[in-house]
Amino acid sequence: MYLIPPLRHDELFQSWLISICQYNDLKIYCSSRIKELRIRDISSLKSEDILNICRYPEINNRCNFVDVIYKHTIFPYITAFSDSSKILWERIKKNYLLYLDNAKNYHQTYFNLSNPKVCIHCINEESNTFGGAYIHRTYQIVGNYFCIKHDSKLKVANEFYNHTGNYLNLDLTDLPEFDNVYTDKLKVLSKDIYSVINGILSSFTIEYIKMIIWIRMEEKGYIYNMIVKSRFFTEFNEYHDYFFLEQLNNVLYPAKENIFDFKKLILSPGASASAYSPIQIILIIRMLFDGGLREFIYYSKKTSTYEKLDSLIKKLKQKVYIDLYSNTDCFTLSENMYKFLLLTYGEY
Image (cartoon, rainbow, N blue to C red; front, side, top):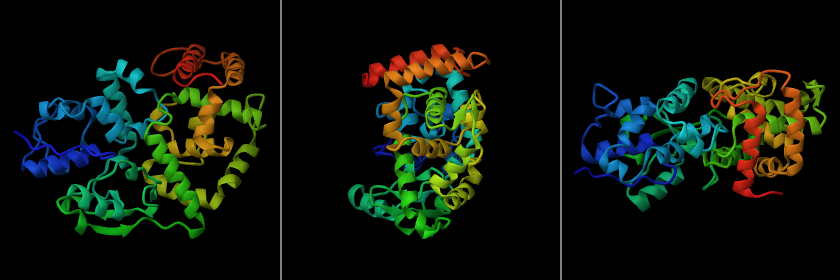
């Protein structure tokens, strides 16, 4: 009989597995691997490993695979704006597992637990409340600098595997420094990251988001005759402050994200969803919509937006514009997405 600790809010699944290993002084057997998992193997888990571990009777009684993926892994962020959990689960089995693993391979940096980010206030609070702390998945997003609960800057826990049993004695260092003038910008970005990983855009597909962005850009005069004007790039840099973007881009470089590369988002429809920079999408939405992510959602549900979407689709039909996963043409995809949003949120 295993002693299974509770899976806490926002706890990274791998952090929970480490606790299980420590509480029970055991290794975890995973049917998709030849050897039992040791603590240092946990950060290399593939989606099939997670699925098989979730089949443990003791674990399955507490959580299922979909809940683990959406509430306790980085996948909802790196596959952000992909599909709702219901749609993805219907496609699941091997195709879905392959989709997740492809995204993981592209964003491998996100899954490195050697030096996770932590909040010292969370560690103290959780140690006093639960008798032990844990690794938060939200903090591991590259570009996230703040714990929004305590409004405190995150720290890097060096050589985490050497201190997994004692969070109070972690070797902590500061994250790469930004100019102090950008502290407020980093806090706003951290709040947006937190909203995305917790599902504020989980009902959207990347293709639908791209088209809504395109429509909004047309409204604001950034696109003429289906061509993006150079003014958009200039004003994007001015809105967010080019020097802030440059510092942020340096932080994102190890994660293969490039804020200044727009080809994968607005200039080249049809690229793999795993290749997008989620932070770039967040920054574009914040520039185009005064209320940020919530204003974007409100705008996307308006009847007038769908009418503009219909007009855009007619222009796009001159080219092949296929959704990579459902093999549905752009018109059907967008129409179904709009109906889904109406059912979910209601009409405006």
